[in-house]
Length: 322
Length: 298
Image (cartoon, rainbow over all chains, first blue to last red; front, side, top):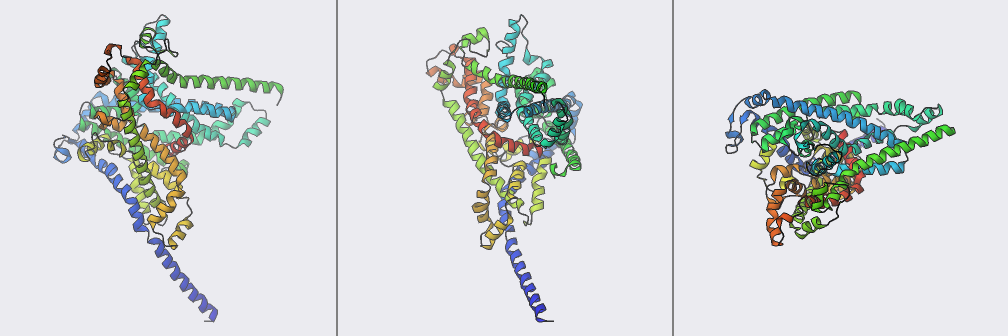
């Protein structure tokens, strides 16, 4: 062993010791970090995991005076009640159909708006975006009032317009037939600003040299949109579609509950699982049945989210949840 | 580009601007209508209906509301308390846990991350939540029933974690070498460095608390605890509102039958929802950031 080698070995050991001490120093933070995380851990335990455990209410005949433990087990009876009623079909159908339909309409309109925004100067497009974004800040409760301004039976703008043209007033809040259209309009009004912005951001990120090349070749604006913009946005659209499928079983409570003014004659047309569960819990007091429907929604939702995420992962790992 | 193509392009631009101007009018129209109704004389409303321009201008509705501002002010007070307390607590809770799981050398990093994000996939639903809140936490008619449920969201943690993960590890390391503990590092170094993320997230959280109505609808019956959005729900039912206010109105020596019912309701909506409509757009950029993460990651 020559001196150099020995020196190197000693230095190596010292280095290793230093590294160990250093790692120890850095490791020592685990306990403190756990303390930092503790409040959130407790919070999540109470508000998420305890309520997950609470789904056993769905298998009991829950009574407030007896509590969860004291209430009797009834097996699948609550589910049976729900699924043999025609309501199960109606609210499931409505939830899915509204979601699918909203997605199609919103995506189409948002793409149109985004493409057109890209055709005008940045200055103007910013103004329009700000205006379109205004409804995002408005709660569904305020929108309930806004819709009523138009649809009120006696004084509403629409009925007065119909009258002035010699027609008959329409009882909007009693006529289910109009509501899929009205809800679509309300949904679009509230969400177009944000949805358009997502796609607009996607368009702005497209490499401008594609457009330059197309322009050189004499492509029209319409051709450029069809052959460049839309294909380049396809991945984004796909991701958003799959995400939408993941939440297909969840509806927008505020839209369906408030905008329709919770009018009983409209239930079959506007009711979704969320509003149904709320009413079963807060109005009719079918606590256990509401829990059963909630569990049904959560379970199907879980399967959908997992399936959606699995698909997203296959396409683009960066966009997946886990 | 030749002249014909250029003029085509110009014509196209005019059509596009026309489209956006019409769209903007369509989006602003409902706001104009409600403002106009609140400024219209009650009798004119009954005669001509709701119009985009007041058929007979009147400020009586606002007069009425502002003469008895108690209810609106109390609702503002409740909402301000909910928003302030909720935002501060939420940011603290979120950033603390986000920091822990953003540290690559933290021992429980992976299990904790799974623990947090599993809650995004499955929830017990409304009923167990309702029973937990009312039967076990006894939060019926408490403002905490509105503050607590929205305090921590996996989305918020995700955003914070993403930001804190970008803080160079060398900074933390050197602080440790200098003998600083994790708490000190977190409060003295990480939080100040995260100001941009805290501001973005804080605005988003504040906005959610300000517009919160679902938990208020579920848990608040007490008149004194009503936040703004729930006040609006109650105004929808005018009779309720009048009944609760009849004492005020009588004390003013006013005839109930002369109450500007319709226009007053709309004036209330504007006083309750209006001010924030002027504040929020200034922060549009931050909302977009918050919502983009939220929607793409969920």
